[in-house]
Image 1 (cartoon, rainbow, N blue to C red):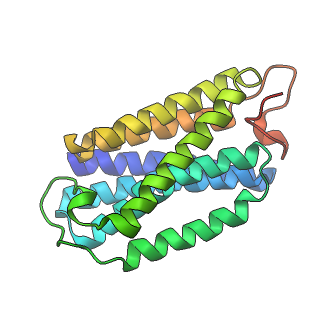
Image 2: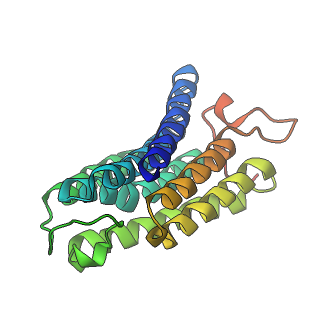
Image 3: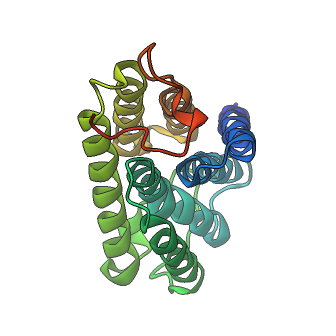
Length: 222
């Protein structure tokens, strides 16, 4: 049951990510593509949870989980928000960061082999530098950027930015309560993905076009 619920959460996040890609193809806006990457990271993280629940945790499953859940999801959310707020140089920086994160997740040595049926704790398998330091910085800065842009844009897009804030809160709770198990963590991830997706595509006030109808800022203050 744990693996089934985690796999269901994977499909939910992947479907929402694909819809953002479709919207990007209809009306290109880099922020949408970065947000699609964030939801794809949610999907991959839930997929790793399903992997661990179904077959037991292993070094490869843990690396996938840490890469997408620990290093990429929050960072991409923040980068997408900054891009939609008008910070155009964030795109190339995001690509550089993604490459760095992938390299670290693949190459960094584990301090102890991963096994068992419960979600592994990073501090038990990774040294503080570079992997855990990078994850702390990426999660902190990514969340801060997403929250700041959403708060500044509340007046312009009250529903959309409120949903984004709610999604970030649920995602944070899911990370804090990861010890509850794969199914519970996946449930939080799926709910967060749905809330965030709703925030990404929610229209501005009635007198303004929807955020994906133009390449301009979606979360910036008027």
